[in-house]
Amino acid sequence: QHAHDLPLAEQAGLLSDYSVICDALDQRPQAITARRQAAERWRQAGNLLKQGESLGYLALLLHLTGDNAQAEQINNQAIAVLEGLPPNRELAIIYNSQALLHLANLDNARGVTIAEKNLAFAHRIEDETLFPRLYETLGLCWLHLDHTRGIAYLEQSLELALHLGQTIRSANTYANLCSVYVEFYRFPQAAACFTTGLAYMAERDLESTRLFTLAWRAQ
Image 1 (cartoon, helix red, strand yellow):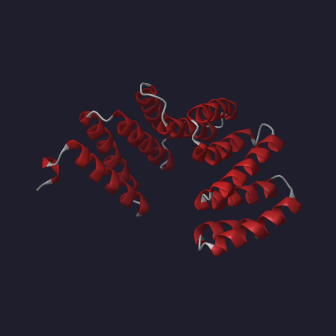
Image 2 (cartoon, one colour):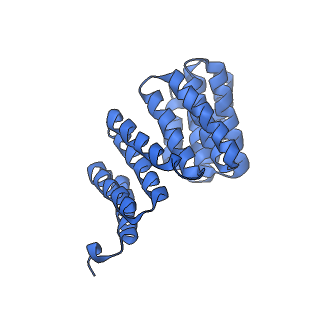
């Protein structure tokens, strides 16, 4: 049976999976096309939650290719879709992307506003699994406005990620914190972070994150 003969939801699922594979193989144009088609199939199938989620992934892919203007436009479309539904964790993830897009456009203050609003939203829907990611984004947005405050939020993000057993998030936050400590000349904290963070990554075979962190330690 050909894919176009399948139900719309199955087509959307296959296209989403194909987009993930293309992205992993660094074939971003194909990943973008597939994700765009998946979002449209979900719309046609009437699954607005999955449509909004797919638009969010599409926005992220566009951002990774440097098309921030288009990424912001698509992310706003995702927000419009998801805000019409009952409160959902997908909307919190899209709000988080919105804050990061403002950060990428050097609008840190707007990023802080969105990130703080989103954190309040996540507390309202009582999804603690989102907190490490959201505190990390809030910290990054504050970093060049008030670096002490930004670092405190990043440290809180790491503490929460470790508590919740979020391995990848914990490793990435260790890496971010190590680089931030170096950038802001907090060398005693950097030394402790490198020791603990690199051991954490090595024990869990997170090689790419470990190599990124080692590169910062070599500076």
